[in-house]
Image (cartoon, rainbow over all chains, first blue to last red; front, side, top):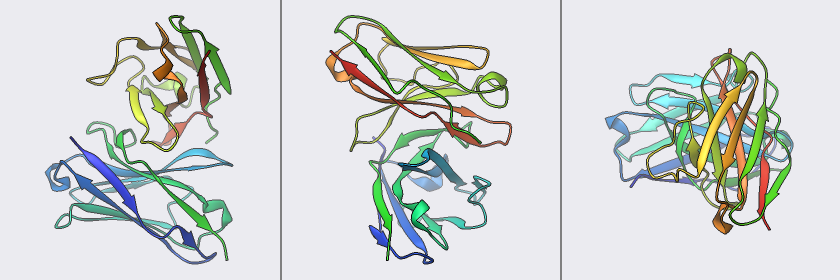
Length: 120
Length: 110
């Protein structure tokens, strides 16, 4: 059974970089599938952030593309999100997910999410 | 990309059927058969209930069904049960090759 768990700081200062890691159990991320991030904020609802493939291909939501980097560490069975130059608008619950193999935008199995607050 | 429009809340009694609508545009819902629905019990991981308009992932009850007409997709829950009380979100692939989500609907079992 595939399970995902987000981890990282719950508080980030404005203008700094938000960094989160997703640890996957029950499946080797190097075996395939896309892996992605989604966030849920009070103001904007659910928002697709981006997706990474085990071969290194990345796909980002255009409004966030200039500030986002996704990466994978197959040795730890983890993938990560970095969001630069954060503002209060980036305060949200961040979810990681395994993405459907034939649609890189469709989250299939989700983690429980982690709340990140941007505040000084 | 604007969020897809869903009713804020829908309620029904146990055993009844309810339908949740999800309205978009020809650039998302109307343009592709790539609508999906998620069930979210707050504090838990969202669960994929329907994908590609009407397909159910393995393990999802056949009480959940999806459909689409024009720019509006729908999720129907038949034989409503207490465990179905949750938030439901639709989503769609878009012409920008991204995914847009709905505003969310809170389902209450009376």
